[in-house]
Amino acid sequence: MEFKNVMLEKEGNLAIVTINRPKALNALNSETLKELNMVIDTIENDEEVLAVILTGSGEKAFIAGADISEMKDLGVIEGRKFGALGNKVFRKLETLEKPVIAAVNGFALGGGCELSMACDMRLASTKAKFGQPEVTLGITPGFGGTQRLARIVGMGIAKELIYTANIIKAEEAYRIGLVNKVVEPEQLLDEAKKLANKIASNAPIAVSLCKQAINRGMQVDMDTAINIEAEVFGECFSTEDQKDAMVAFVEKRKLEGFKNR
Ligand code: DAK
Image (cartoon, rainbow, N blue to C red; front, top):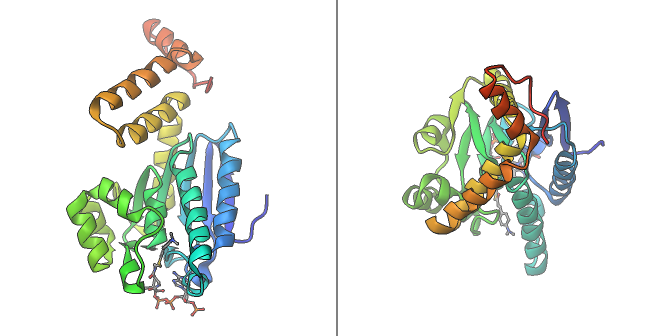
């Protein structure tokens, strides 16, 4: 499928999604969000894809936010529509049954920072910069920033970043736990692929269930969360991968790959 603003490439078991509007620093307009929505559906239905990398095109930006030139003239109803579209897409990415790594190659501001936070983890190049500058534009973060940032880095740091609109460098993002690792720009994609392939080498259904258990468990009390874990743990025993891996272990032989069944 060909899109104007989003590229989808496949490399073995990986899908690499690139937001491709470098002239607008990959800002998310509604057209791009709609395309991203379709790309996520494609990935969801592609059984070969076991892990996803999301990045931005060009040297400067991951995503410099929602498209301000499109947003500036929105009325209340259109604003709600735009917000609903974004939230639908971000939530779809967050709950996609495959792990997603954000490879943050430059500015990740506003909706860009928020999109990276809807991914499972973030790798950053030394050139990456993160921030939620919405209050400088007279708005609040609208694609989950107030919720996901606080969950990832804690309430105090999230409030400081959101109230001040400070833009932080990759090293600071690493220090506060917003990113998992910082690497040189030319190594970013390779590092992301290495990590994605490592994840993809493990039992795909188990990885997917871990994602579900962590995401759902973070929203609820510990007793409910432990029950979610017990539920997904049980589900693993309906898979061929669990049987194959445990039999291989007991027979002291190496398992030649998982079946994803
Ligand atoms: N939207 C549209 N165009 C953008 C853009 C953006 N967010 N960011 C950059 N561009 C465009 C610039 O207009 C410029 O276009 P031309 O003038 O060349 O046509 C081109 O990209 C290059 O940008 P600059 O010339 O500004 O490049 P600089 O290196 O000088 O500066 C910068 C880079 C990233 C510091 C600067 O571009 C910048 O400050 N950009 C805006 C960053 C920002 O404020 N982002 C947050 C956007 S607010 C909601 C849903 C979502 C949201 C809110 C509510 N609802 C529920 C309804 C989310 C809001 C946001 O994300």
